[in-house]
Image (cartoon, rainbow, N blue to C red; front, top):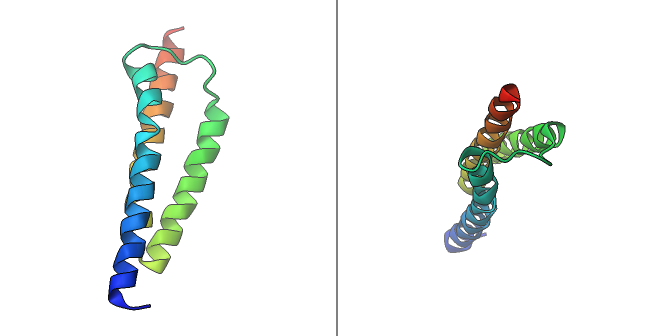
Length: 92
């Protein structure tokens, strides 16, 4: 694949990753700003974090900046949600 095509592949990957990260923002807002955590399954979020970690390792192995950045950002979002839910459930 030529350099221009590789660049476009990474741009598409960055765009897809950005959308994936933005999708978590409403959930972060619910947990951290409104204090709602009902219906959030920590085991499910733990599994999502494991999958994102595996994708991150894959991205590092193939040296894909878009996969690395997208999964780091998504892991950050998931971590915020998990920590927020743990904090809120500790109050109950």
